[in-house]
Image (cartoon, rainbow, N blue to C red):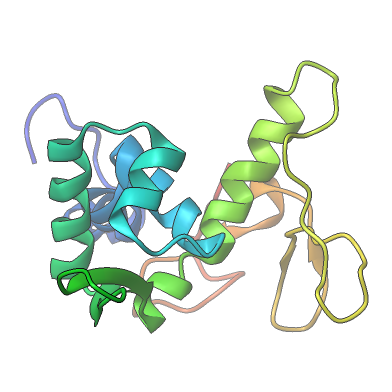
Length: 168
């Protein structure tokens, strides 16, 4: 800890922060946009480049990073008369980021859409109902925000324990 770093609340080890670790893997704009496209079913390099408008070198670098981090896997394919190429498919680790991408989308729809309709709507394939993300505790209660959560460092007693810090 440096002199300008505030002390970690109640023994929380910021060096092991899951948010920081996740951002180190996917915190760059193009990485999240590649994942968005993968969630929408776009798998091939040329299709990703066309959808994103990303420079070829940037897209290549991001795809290599996402493969190295086991968020995407390369699967070979060959169109008739063409050389073998790779398409990029989500791994379990990659699919686990779907709620995070949906949360970012919902935030953008709420705060950046300028009062208009969101550019993309999600609906449940089975019933057609709109899809939205919400937080619930293990007992099934809706959690409305950070003031309804107690952050407790790993290894300490949960809510109500001495030293537990409200999350917001």
